[in-house]
Picture (cartoon, rainbow, N blue to C red):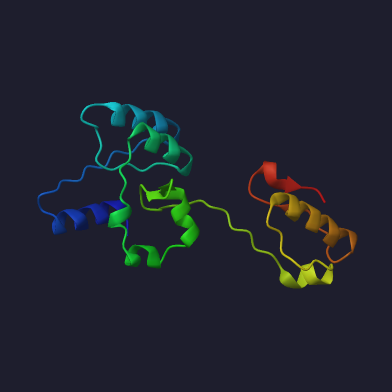
Length: 154
């Protein structure tokens, strides 16, 4: 469901609430949020922010503790680790949404063929295991992750 549809649905269920959407470019988002939330009263009731700004915004008092409002049903269809994004010092300050968290999948069969008994848990492990897999001739490849900073010629 698109954001406009959700907005209409929410306002229909809450007739005393008017939701106005303001779209801001990603590059301008932190500055726009800082300025808006520092005003009195804050310009926004709800903001969308990136994971990298949660701690800063909590420390500045821009975000409210909503821990008591998070239900088991809200958590049900979300990876438990997604809540780490919106949780600061054990308190929840938002709903995980549109997370671009990267998940690493591995091929257990290839690891076993190379004699690797445990999956990698760090980028260093990925590089080391990839070199072992290549050295043992299990596969011949260039391993590549998202972005040039995570591409390795092995």
